Structure formats: structure tokens, C-alpha cells
Amino acid sequence: MTEADPAIYISGARALLNQLKVQKADVPDEVLRVQELVECLDNNAQKIAAALAANRRRGDSVTGADTTAQLLKEQKEFISKVGGICLRVTLL
Image (tube, rainbow, N blue to C red; front, side, top):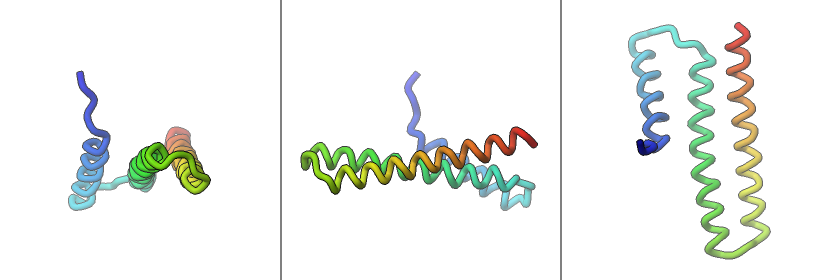
């Protein structure tokens, strides 16, 4: 079985949430927030991959390393936020 592109799942989840909003269904804020954070994680992962590829093409540079380090730091923060929201939902 081949793995599907994560973007399919992310856009599918966004489409589902949008349809629920149209139907005026009750969607917990935590679910919406997790979706936003997952989209941020995906966007940031793409930026990290691009930065790493650029570093390989140009060779090592302080600027490239700083950019990649900043993106990785943001990624860690996004993951922590998702984990925090999931923990709060579990405790409810």
C-alpha cells in the first residue's frame, strides 16, 4: 500500500470542517484549532524541506542554518500546541 500525500488528508479535513460550518453543525473550537495547527505544521514542513534542499545546493551557510533552525523551533512549538489541545480534550 502506498502512502497518500498528506495534503490530501489536510485539505479533506478542511473541506469537512467547512461543510460542517455550512450545515451549522456544532464543531468544538479545539477541533478547529487543531486543524489550523496541522495546516501550519504542513506548511512549515514544506519550508523546512525547501530550506534543507537549498542548503545542500549552496553548501553550508550560517544564514541557511539559522533559517532551518528557526523553522524547526516553530515546528516544535506547533507540535506542542497540538499536544496541549489534545490533552485538554482528553481530560474533558
